[in-house]
Length: 334
Ligand code: ATP
Ligand code: LTN
Image (cartoon, rainbow, N blue to C red; front, side, top):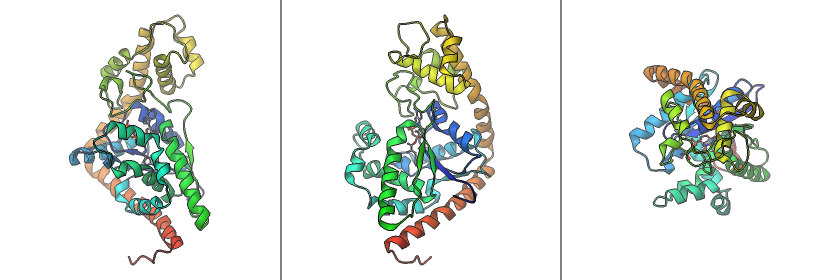
């Protein structure tokens, strides 16, 4: 708790532009929850290092993600929007908590297995210890709730296990966090292959709709989305492409799946895809506009990065000191 509010924490990696999976699966929920909680939203730039990056590109991605948080409606005066790398406590606690995490646990993580297969030439230790750093992000702020997409569920379970293990030895040091996973939009699939999640790193860029894509591009991508040889718009397991489009339409329009089935009864895929494209484009247009305005205001964004980085560090340091004391490390000299 901070004051009388529960704490909410989440982050996104600084890897390229955000797509509608990131937006509808995560960011959109953050905005809806932000009044209720004391919120910390980080740009996970240390996590982004697990994949080799051009320095200029990493710098740009990190800033773009932070501006996207603001453009999507998170007020930086009320929510702590900051760079993970601005707060050294993340990396320090990660070393300590790594000593409370088993190799077997890390080896089991599906994201580790997927990313190792994808980047077989660079299976670095960071890729394996990634969930430990993520756990520390969350635990440093004593977070109660962590809104993420479905793919992060396993990492959240590991976070709880590590925290409970630590608390079991040293007493109640950490709050045990709960994952918050939205009902719709938690798993947006690729438009080219509905068996895979939509991902920035997908080679086929037509399968990914970015928050900053313009209206024509968005509509074109939806028109090309893979469906099936049937014609009816119904939500059924054997129609994964249509299910995905219905999920996207539902979360973008606020309509239920039943309402959508009724709306498109007797109508064809062409009409449906156009409606999905237009609705998504309309939701994203104001975000794009605000993003463009923020891109021009360098001094303002710089001041947010600095002030919020300091605010985050204040809370994170408190937890880190407590942990150091509990485990028997000496008092810090500075
Ligand atoms: P990549 O696509 O390169 O694997 P990513 O987009 O999964 O990266 P992050 O930027 O770290 O990685 O994800 C940020 C948030 O977006 C997380 O909460 C994650 O669960 C959510 N998310 C990512 N992809 C999707 C998706 N396809 N559907 C729903 N939520 C998603
Ligand atoms: N691994 C997460 C990003 C992330 C995160 C976090 C999410 C890093 N630290 C802390 C929630 C809480 C991902 O979405 N790929």
